[in-house]
Length: 511
Image (cartoon, rainbow, N blue to C red; front, side, top):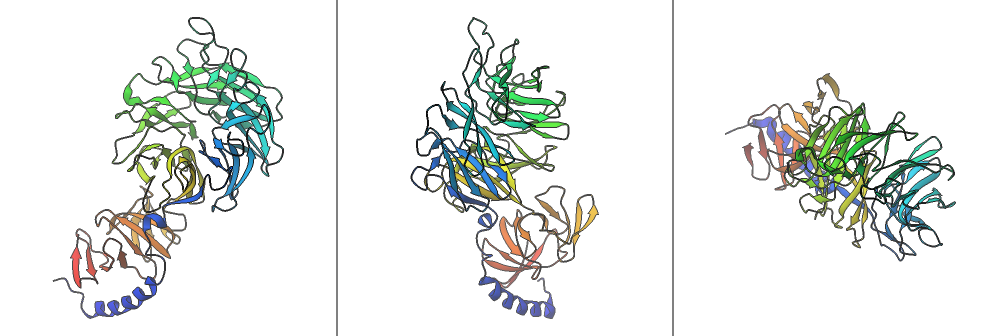
């Protein structure tokens, strides 16, 4: 029998004191909730609140701004603000209260100084949507442009604006002046620009102007240098969408990639391209190896297209993405409105080189409650948290604002010595490798997934134990295992197998 003798008995006495001290704390709560998904706000919490947000959050310091597609005093949506900690929720504007106002906002708000810019998919004097601005304190709301539709204008935008200097750029899903093959107008969308004061509105490009052009963009533009990049959900040689580029003055339009030539390469992209280095990243709603969509990359010159991930290739994987990816360093974060363990959507991460794909959260999780479901839009990064909105769920079933803690946080390995090649050494924890972050590969403990923000309290998911365990700098190598409520003592250095003394059973165990 494995035996550590008298030294171990002294450690056991110390542990008894530590157990009593720690049990009166709060660290024994569910680790998935400890670093999991928190509902910051549930829509429809009061009369005339906004509901069903079809977009994303725009951060400004510790405050987020967003839009709800429906609800409000007139039923046509709202503009709201909320603090990153969930406090201070406030409706800044109710759409539809005046003649010619916009209705049903989609996408995200664009912040410049103390002014927010956005679009609605409907409303306006022509019923085709509007471009608007509003101050961050809710004052100064103004409609800058009412879309008129074909043949002179775009119609029904389903995306966000981008800003460069004093000029706003965007796309509409319908309208445009391109002539259809059989006569009439193609009605397949347009690219436009407008000054921030509402002057100088101009259609830069009409989709359908060339053979096998893209059609029906469902998203936003990305600006790289002096070039605009975007996607259309339809059109192209195979009617599965395209990736395109165009100069800021509307010249130099060209298709970089046609989706649909091979099903495995994805089809029907939605959202906006994300730029990192000389590479663009995006997602398709369909195609891929399993027909559930893809994550892809392509260089800004159109070369190097490749699929980084086909949804459906992991257990309980996400499916049918509709929004863009958020880049943070060498990591990409995103959401899908379907898939996950409950088929109500999922949050994932993947490295920019295609490695390290991992599901971070499946919506409708009994641990965290409130049944948030169907996330859309990109995630906003706030410190070590990812924040976003869901169209449904929440306490009232009308959508929610949520926050998901991601790890490892920057403070988790404070004081560690970098040894090169991703290897680190921490005096109390030993040697471990961060090359597959957020997973760590400990020299003797093996693969672990840490949850926490400091060495004062860390949960680890241990795939060998198939359980979470807890420790901290003060008591390691003593561990608390969640699955059976047992305190363990890890014999440091033991690996293949690892040895643990179980204080609950009074026996040594190995795995």
